[in-house]
Image (tube, rainbow, N blue to C red; front, top):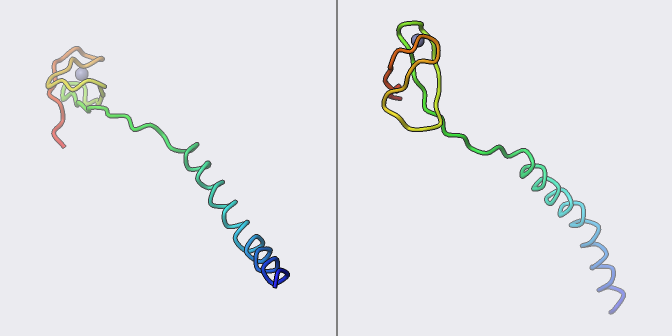
Length: 75
Ligand SMILES: [Zn+2]
């Protein structure tokens, strides 16, 4: 009776052990690859046809190239 329980426990260890290992290692890999979400606001200058961005939510922002005030793009 005890031998059959040991055999069953050994069978579970052999079959589920690699699956648990893969599951844990994939969780670590996903956590390492996860990038922080960056929120940026996009602006377009019609004067010099450039796109530029800002971390702050501003309705108007000065173009870094020509200095013109431009509206935020509505997406
Ligand atoms: Zn510009």
